[in-house]
Structures are given as C-alpha cells and as structure tokens.
Image (cartoon, rainbow, N blue to C red; front, side):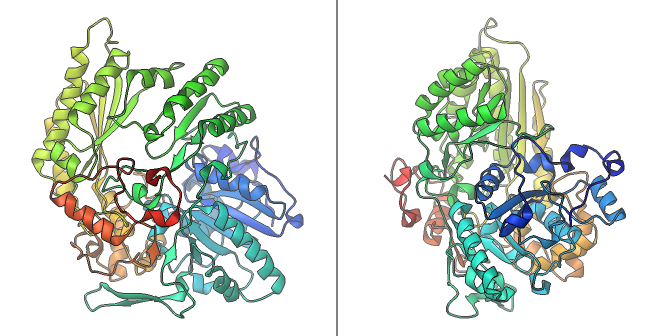
Length: 613
C-alpha cells in the first residue's frame, strides 16, 4: 500500500525532511518488476542512520541488482510517531512511501544496544508481530546484522535470523536463495531452514538453550545435527575488490556525518582489551591508495560534498597513509574541499601529518588515551604513553591548533581512585604543554575537553568475564574526577551511568531479555540513547515484571569455563586467546600489536589480512 504523507502532518513535525525521500542519488524502481523488496531499517532517526557507512554500501549494492529493490526505513521521531498513530499510518519506506508490512525482508542494523527498543517499536508501527514465532506466511522476514549481532541472544525471540560478519557476499546469497524459495512456494519455516545452512547465518529458533539452577547457561545446541554447532562470521577477504558505491545519497538536511566517508581498511591490529570492534573485525584488510583515490574522485563528482573523511578503527595505522594523504591532499586542495582524519593514535601523530590532512580548514583534534595512568593503559593494552600524548599535543599547539578533545573510560578492571585522578593530571599536563609553546605560535583560545564513558564489558573481548562497576561506583568516580578538574581551559563531560548499566545488560545478556525488551516497549521505552527520552525507572519496572534481575548480567565475575550466551558464535578470535589476554591484563603485561608479531588470536583461519603477512 502506497501512502502519501499529508502536508498538514509534515507541517506539524520537526524536520519534515526526514520523511520525504527523493534525495539526490536515491534509487527508485517499479516494485512490480523486482523479485525482492528489502527494507534497510536503521533503528534511529534519519540524521543518524544516513551517516552510517554500512547502509550506504549495502543500499547501493542491493539496488545494483535488477531483481532487488532496497529502500530505507528510519525510526520516526516522537512527534512524527504520534501523528502516524493518530492517523493510522503504518511505518513506511522513504523511496516508495509504501507500507513495509508487505516487503519481503526488513533488515535491521545493530550498531548499539540502546537502539533495541526502537526495533520493537518500529515492528509495532509496521503492524508486524513482535515475536518471530507469531509471524505468519506472507509476512516479512526480519533479519539483523552489525556489531551487536555478535551477541544476538537478547533479540533471539524477535529476529528471524541474524547475519554474522560482513554482509556484501552473504546478502547476495540470501537474495538468491529467497528467489528460488519464492518460486517453490514452500513454507516460511522451510526458508528459515534453508537459510540456516548459509555460512554466517544464525536462526535462533533452531537452537535450544538449557540453563543451570543458578541461571547460568548449561548448553546451547541445535535442535538437529544439521544446524552448525558454531556459526562462523563472514568476511570479505580481498577488500580491494569488495563492492563500494560510486555514488551516495545526498540528504536535503544536515546529518551527523555529512561528508564522503572513505573506508580505508577493516579490522584493527592493536588489541585493546576493552574494544569489541578491534577483536571481531579481525583480520585487517586494506584498500590500496590508488583504489581509494579512484573512489574519492567518483564520490566527490557524484555528490558535491566539500569534505572527505577517512573511516576505519585506527586510521593512522593504515600502512600507506603517507602516500594516500599526499594524493588526497592534492585532490582536496584543487577542489577546495576538506580532508579529515578522525581517528588518531597519540603514538603515530606528527605535525606533518596534521598539516597535510587539515591544510584547507583547521578543526579540533581528538585523542583517546583511554586511561589516566600508565598502569591502566598497560592493563587495557593501549600501547601508548603519557610522553606520546604530550609530544603530540605540543606539536599540535605549535601548528596553531587550540581545541583538543581527550577521551577516557572510567570503571576499567583494576581501576582505583588514583587512576581516576590521573585523568585530571593528564588534562592539566596538556594545558601546561600549551603554555610551554611560545606566544607567537599560540592562538590564545585554548579549549581542552575531557570526556569519560563508563566501561561496558563486551562479548568477544578479554574483559567479557569481568563485572561492571555499579551505578553508585561509577557516579562516585565521576564526582571525584569533577572535583579534581578546576581549570577554566578544561571542560569535563561524562555519560549517564544508568545508561551504561543497561548497555552492559544487553551487551552480555541471554535470550531471556527478549521479553524484557517487549515489556519495556509496552511501558513506553524508546530512543533510550537519547537522554531526554531515557527512563531508567520504566526499565526497572520492566525487569521486575519479567522476574529478571538485571545485575545478574553486570555484577558477576564470570568463570572462564562458564558457557556464555554467545559461545555458539565464531568470530575467529579464540576463547583461549581472550583468556590469555585477560590474565595478562591483571598482571599489567602488554601484548605487541599484530604487525610486530602474530599474537595467536585465531583470526588466521579466515586467510588474508596484512596483520599476518
């Protein structure tokens, strides 16, 4: 059913541009001439979703197929949702305006745990049953992928199937299988049975979870032997030849990352022990500078954007960064556009690099020391020193920069109040470094922003067994740090510890949490990542109503032999390696990064990757 949103409705909501579509480079097809209609669903507002690189890639990749029509769907903001419910308007796709209830697939990307209630709310808005077992023949298949899918269990009762790893190859395999299934006129369950045999696909209903008396998991196993005991993630082995669009949609409104994003490489060699992305995206695979320049030129021509950003987990670790920046700067200077390098490691920073990437327009610089003392940086295997940071910011100040952001975590394993105070000490040393630079080189407007997030133990990291600090402990550390920062040049920002607590619950939770999500949705929880909508009390009521203690997932020190909710997922990094890294963390021992020597993480099973050449 196609529906035109009445202008009278759009005139009564914030930012109506979120809902009208028809942007430059958006794709429009005749739905009658395709075999598959795929709704790429981002469980947040338009500005956030349109900044997501994965959507840009997969949207154009699927639409390059003549037999598939991929459209975009975003979570409507609360004002628009109110009007949609008032006028009985089901959730719709931007390109066609069609209700997504009759699409073949709704594909959700799971970028952060606190978007889960938006998934439930979007299904409700589309009038689709919330539980996978309640969906009937002819209703869409609900699939999901992305970093949070590596622990799929909290959504196991809601999502029909999950895609583990990178989607370019596996999505095409799923589309081909679906077209054949559609012609066969077999049952819904028959398709799920078939798709479960594609490597990288996990269908929760075909797996039983048995629990011990204490609430821990006894066993996770397929209901039949044909369902793989381990679901192995998919990766693109040769990134050089992987699909990347030569055009991207240009929104009518400003979005969070309103620029061209060049994916330089995937993976990370560093091995920070708190970082899930650094573990699950292994091994590192790079694109050549020549290929990246070719992509950049095509995207700039097709979009008219005035900024290019290099996107990866640790951009300054790119092996051909010097050549790439030299060639890109020639292009950006000629076109009068800006080149930004958002992810800087303090140990690989140089004035030359800084001047190269920000010749056109100076902006603030961001560094992530992560911890305030060397003891803690060794615990998390950050691999940088205080001297690295001070040297880097001094170079920046000498180059005319005056705006520095420093990112830290509090609540890390083994952390003491002395370590927390070290964050303030480091910020003061950055200020001192600024005033050590001669007045002729300083701008006179120093601004140092210290931001702390609260540590959240994540699946497939060496800290996945470690408890999270309580809300009270985190708040005490935030107040303590605040008391230590008394300088007009330093501003301190921190995250809500209640939000971090809930994030930890769903990051390490099991499939019992599906009913909590649905209960929380009934109580009005949505946009939980937005402080003005986050209602911790409603969440606590939902847990109580479901008879579940959320602290069970956050406060326990889990044993190494405990069966974890994600143990049936294989990301390549072995549990043996993660245990070894956890033990080294608590003895303050660091591990070299992968380009220095192979650490035996297990990712070599995939083949390829510069970290193991």
